[in-house]
Amino acid sequence: MLDVLTQKVHDESRQGEAYAPFINDPAQYQKKFYIESYGCQMNFSDSEIVASILYNTGFGATRNAEEADLVLLNTCSIREKAEQTVRKRLTEFRKIKSAKPGLLVGVLGCMAERIKSKLLEEEQLVDIVVGPDAYRSLPGLIEEAEGGQKAVNVLLSREETYADISPVRLNSNGVSGFVSIMRGCNNMCTFCVVPFTRGRERSRNAFSIIKECRDLFDRGYKEVTLLGQNVDSYYFTPEATDNNAGNGAVTFASLLEMVAQISPLLRVRFSTSHPKDITDDVLYVIKKYENICKYIHLPVQSGSTRILQMMNRTYTREWYMAKIDRIREIIPGCGISSDIIAGFCTETEEDHRDTLSLMEYSGYDLSYMFFYSERPGTLAQRRYKDDIPETVKKRRLQEIVDLQNRLSRQSNEKDLGKIFEVLIEGNSKKSDQDWMGRTSQNKVIVFSKKSAGCNKGDYVKVKVTDCTKATLLGELL
Ligand code: SAM
Ligand code: SF4
Image (cartoon, rainbow, N blue to C red; front, side, top):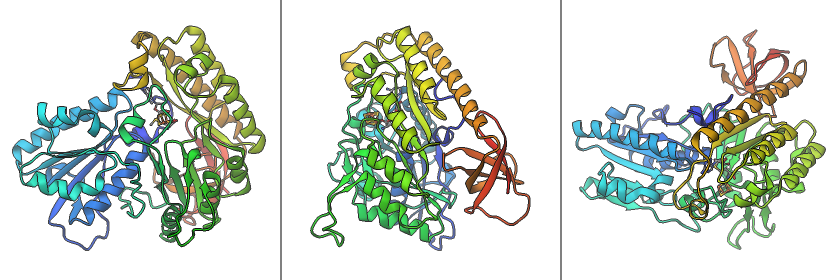
């Protein structure tokens, strides 16, 4: 299966992840919920909000679906494969349900709106369907479903940001936390289902974001990642009722600065930037603060201006290249990664070669690579024919992946002999004798623990001694 296949991928490796039970939780819960998350980091972050809502309703978490009273799947619609995976999981849960009739099964997130009637009525796979803006209504919906009715709320909102809900961080490493700063998207890229499943863009109250980041830092976290579909269009105007009103509108550049000022020991990351919206102001703030990581995820999608126009990305190939130049000029050594789609409608071999040459020009450290998957209801589905044969899409994707592997290796080789400040995230996957951490540029680095002197969450200096295409290997100094 050719869908994101290089190095990393954090998100992909977490697909279907289930929550651990609450650690050190004194409460004895009457009921238990089990939740699996799919898709992007926003969805994983949403599951933490859902966990918080359920926690306050008297549910405790379990990692074992068979002992749960409520099973939830937080779903993704971005590509067809993501939806198929969830459907398959739902049929597996139906089997558990037939042995335990009281069990409630619910679908949350992006698939909720798209296929609610199919899931509820035609296939009778689920009892509860809740869209991304309706999680506050979950307790009421559970009650309805317990009474034997099908419970649905897929209304999208123009205001909901869950600003006041403190997410329960169940599966965190205790070092890095994700903080949602906005919801929805107004961009209307023609291939993308997000504006339909997650609704209009809205920015969360800046002061609640700062509070959440400060709380994380006070609890020992050393890194926050600010999340949104298009973080650079973050814009918040304090109301007269806000304690901090009078300071004027908060842009993404000013928000970033406010978070960076919490403590120099708190690293700040963000995702995702849209090339059309990232400003020099943001780049200068990144440069100014040591603790803002020198890493930008700047999805290009295609290297062909003609395809970019059909995708409604609102920039050209040349404009994107100038943005890369600007980043490299203002923040030398900045890590840059991308998302790339192979085989969008009408894509020619020449368009494809444009993508390869733009990747080469940008010298990405990492890319998330996909072949185009037509999504019902999107502008592309209505306007264009999905006319590139699957074999061609996959061959082009493989060429993109091969090139990225070479670029990643080259990028890692350039780091040989250099010394980086690394935040230790925990044991390496392969050995508990080694630490795994990240550089500011978001590269994973593995190094021997040597002495017992350091711990998870520490900043250490590490010299790069070797590398693979995916990982740096180093020596603790
Ligand atoms: N908002 C972010 C942006 O604009 O870069 C990311 C949104 S989406 C969750 C993540 C990536 O999925 C996109 O950047 C795109 O490369 C990919 N994607 C979205 N729709 C797709 C589709 N229909 N087929 C294949 N890949 C798709
Ligand atoms: Fe989708 Fe484009 Fe919005 Fe990203 S910016 S979520 S790709 S519509």
